[in-house]
Length: 88
Image 1 (cartoon, rainbow, N blue to C red):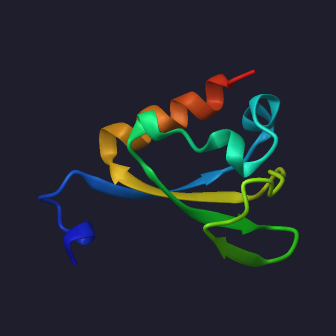
Image 2 (cartoon, rainbow, N blue to C red):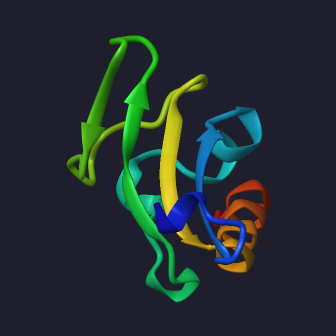
């Protein structure tokens, strides 16, 4: 219930893995970065039509997959920006 309340600055986001994200990241382990203070819950593998909670760090990222993260809204936005800027 607390997540649905407008009085909290916590958000849960589904982030679509697109070409820009794939230019910087290859596997799930590449995107997990504690400095953003977000919790990575899992990945929906579109090709398999299946969600994986706490996936193996070597799970490949593919276009059309969805990353599920939760955290303070500001931190989630910063994390999304980081993904689109790329790490490589």
